[in-house]
Amino acid sequence: MSWDAYTDQLKQQGCEHAAIVGLDGNPWTTQSPNFIITQAEALKIIQGYQDQSNFQASGIILGGEKFMFLRLDGQCIAGKKGSRPIAIRKINTALVIGVGSESTQPGTLRTAVEKQGDYLSSLNY
Image (cartoon, rainbow, N blue to C red; front, side, top):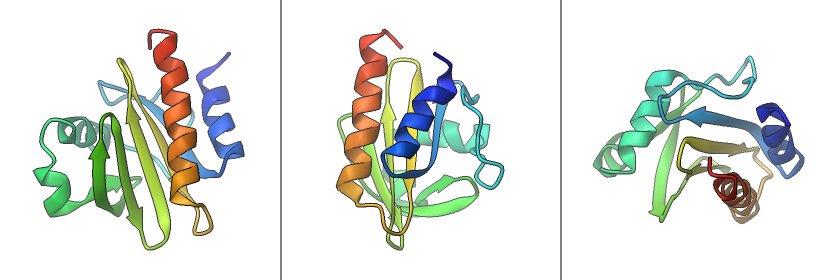
């Protein structure tokens, strides 16, 4: 199965945009042309798992958009921009990222991203 199949599954579960990005900041999946997560953005998120103060002060930048940081529970970051939720799940080798639309329920998005992350973790990724 290609990496894109995993993000396609997330999109079927309510993600407007989804990506898997390695812990080196490089994308593992094809990104939407109108929502590209840069290596610098991914690396700042990875750093935020160790020190949340940057998220609290500056928010989370994804695809050039600023999202408000809500919380970090274990390995899952929650945020939002208006009513658009985001969920980011850190696994051993990558970040699983989901961005919802205006109508996406935050809990639904988070559950989908966490389940995908749990599944990939079970495969030692």
